[in-house]
Image (cartoon, rainbow, N blue to C red):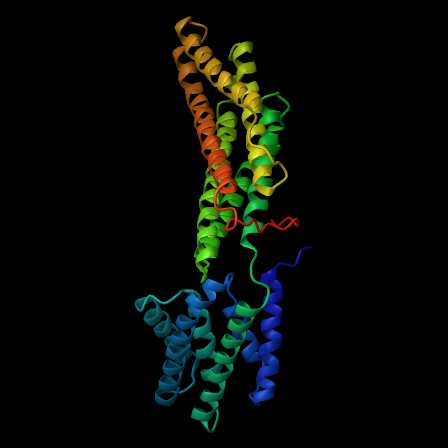
Length: 361
């Protein structure tokens, strides 16, 4: 089992919240630990973005809890009304939805236990919740900054390798269809996760011009990596969907498709290795010629299939989307290759790669 940075940060935030509560003399300290758990965020920028919303939501929750408890008492129905009011107000103010949980925790711990000196009791409970939020903020800001570059690169690379393996199997008729049907939804979910990682990385702010420009270039490269990944995944889904139609293609057409995809997937793999620094030279002239020749040959063969009556119009139309995706994949790879080469050719003093060897999934 791998323990990620967010797991460690959650543990550290709980420890800090409990020790801080004991040092200040607020009890019970575990209330601070609970709020610290809810307040942990996946990125430094997200921490800055949500801390104000969390403070506002906690204040709203505390005010509602105190007013309702003093006016109507501590009955469970009153607590439920307070929770509904807090959620409605937070949504109306368009605060971050993650702050709702903290506001509800504040209401419940303030109204849950009646006390003789209720206002003092409420103030202590509110302070405990805020202490947990502040502890989480400190841990988010100081410890274990997220390695988004490493995560994005390795997740993109691993998903690309997996999809390429499936394409090579399916073009050689060695596919276990049951396994493929199971893997396609899982790969799709992983790509959604990758999109979210990219957004987190994009949200992170750089406060030095040199770092900001370098990151802007990497964002462009990573975005194109993800586009190329989605395109090769589309090809895999198309092969799965039109497997029967593709199997009925003439042998020379199937061979041409297989060879062109082999060239393109090798090209894709080389670009990813080039970005990582494991390949020092750009695409060779010989490889480029093979890809261009295969593109022309595949297009001509496909057009001749229908012109010479080798396949029916319906079969031709079913295979057309697959060929179209292969051509688009070629174009996306060429664009990615140009971006990577430009990244290494210009502004070399700013363009530093920060990808660790450890693989993150």
